[in-house]
Length: 134
Image (cartoon, rainbow, N blue to C red):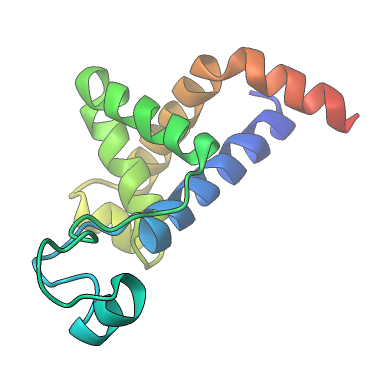
């Protein structure tokens, strides 16, 4: 695979991970806004909590990767899990491969397969993006 395509896919995955971790955190059961915050924002502390679902910045490129990863889950579950671990968890690739109970070379192979699959799914967009850069 072309190095510029790999760089672009890695860039898109890093952007997705940043969006996923910082902007799209799921609600873990706590109110997303304090009573004081609701008073200042909505003028009332009672009634329905209008912020029960955490809102996040729309990020169409990251959402596109999210959709593709959900599709990947059905066809290539291991690769999808490795992409998630690679971009959402901390640690070295060796630690991550141990977490997946596979060798480091096998982990890297699956990671490259997942990136290639994403490159294929994004091929038209990738070619247009890379042509603009040149």
